[in-house]
Image (cartoon, rainbow, N blue to C red; front, side):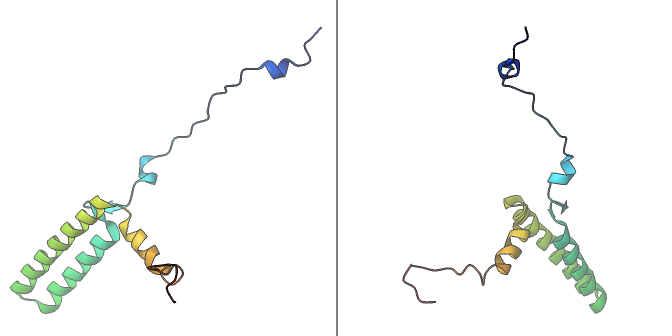
Length: 107
């Protein structure tokens, strides 16, 4: 006679299903160690500065400014790779979540 409650005696552990996620899908989008959009934007601004003024001083100044800004952007990305997105979200929600110094503060 077959045991009617045989399915209740099955082992309680089952193997977990795993899915492979490619590393490029979960990493931040960086260029030269900084946020890609900001690096490209500062490069564009430096090139515009160099070609509008068209002097050796503007060329040197544009290169120095771009290297300094990319260095600062790399430090920012090292502190938090998603800092630009977090700051933009903070600015967007600023009207919704107002800072208060105490519960009795008037709006």
